[in-house]
Length: 271
Image 1 (tube, helix red, strand yellow):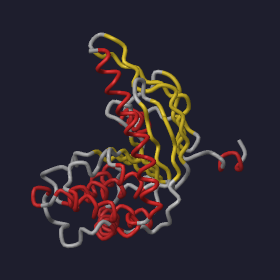
Image 2: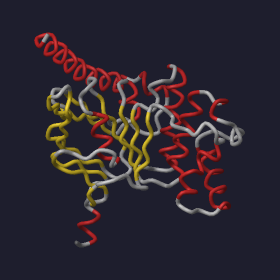
Image 3: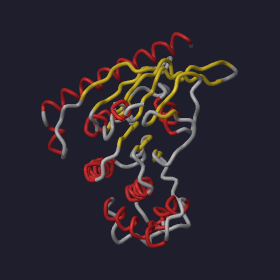
Image 4: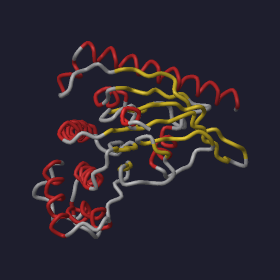
C-alpha cells in the first residue's frame, strides 16, 4: 500500500454494516446496510427515532459490539476490539466516585504506564482545557452534572485518542448547562482537534455542533439522509438566530419527524 493510498483512507469507515440481535426470541435487525465515511477531524452527529441503531453503530465503532456482517475500519484497519485511539463517552459519566478529578483523568494514563510526572503534566493540561481549574482535588460527588461530563471528556482526551465516540453525553443535563457544554465542547475541539461521532436526540444540538448531520431511519436502522452544515466555526449562540441555522434545523427536524411518524404508524398497525 502506497503512502498516497493510506492517506486517502477516511478516519472512520462503516462498510455495509449489518447488526442483528435476538429480541423476545425473534431476530431484530438493529442496522441494515449502514455505510458511512467520516474524515479526519470531522464532527458528525447522528440523529433519529429511538431504536434506529444509533448506539449500536457507535458501539460497533468502539469495538464493544461486533457486526453480524460488514465491517468498520479506523485508519484503514478493521475494528475488532476497543482501542486507545477511540475514546468513548456515554450519557452516564462513569467516573470513579472514590477518585478525584485529577485521578479520574489520569486513570487511563496510569494503565498505559505513564510516569507520575507525565500524568500530572497531561492532567494539568486537560483540567485547563475543559475548564476544571480549581477542582483537581474534588470528588465527583462534589461536582455539578456539567462538571462531571467535562471530567469524563478530559479523561477521554488524556489518553490522546484521535477519535471521540459520544453517546448522548449531554442528555441528562438541564437546558442551560447543556448549551454551555456544547460551547465548551466546540472550544475544546477547536483547540485540540479530534474526529467526533456524536449521538443526540436534540436537533438544535446536532446542527450547532456538526459538519454533517446523519439522519437515521428505523425498522431496520439505516441512514435516511445526510445533511451538510455549512455554518462557519467558531460558533456562538448568535448563530442559532441566523436564517441559515433555522433552515438547517427545520430540514433536519422535518426528516426526523417524518421518520418518527412512520415508526408510530408501523407500531400501531402491528398492535
